[in-house]
Image 1 (cartoon, rainbow, N blue to C red):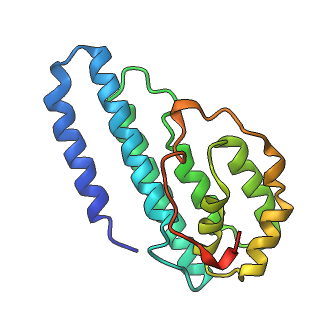
Image 2 (image 1 turned 90 degrees about the vertical axis):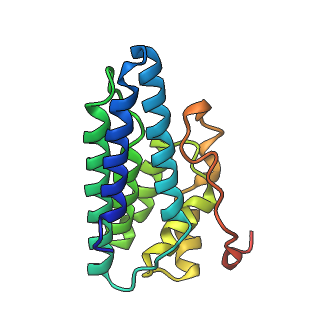
Length: 179
C-alpha cells in the first residue's frame, strides 16, 4: 500500500521509451503516447476492480485513495509533458475512483456513484459493485441498496464509443450479488 516502486518503474520506463520515440512524426508520437496512457489507466483500473485488496478501516481506505490520487497526478504530469495536445486522457477516472474509496459518509455514495456513471458512461454495474466491495465497510445488502438507489438501470446506453476505459475491463465473478 505504501510502496510506489511499480509506479516509479512505469514512469521511468515511459520517459525512457518516450524519448526513444520522440523522432517519430508528432502525429504518430501522440497516437503512441495516447495509447500507452490509455493502456496504463485501463490496467490500473483493472487492478482496482479486481479487488486485490479489501480495506478494513477508514484510515487504510483513505491512505489507499490518497495513493491512487498521487499516482494519478504522477501519470497526468508524465503524459502532459509528453503529448503535444494534452486534452483529457482519462486520468480523471482514477481521481473519481479514489473519491468513492475514501468517502467516509456512506449515505453520500449514491451521489458519488451517479457522478461516476455520468462521467464514465461505459462503467458497468459489476465495476461499481467491485469498487464498493473493495471499500470493506459495506455489507452485500448495503451494496445492493446503493446500486438500487443510484438507479443505474435508467441511465440508458450512454455514448462511451471507442474511448471508454471500462468497456474492456472484465470483473471477476461476484457471486455475492446473485444477478
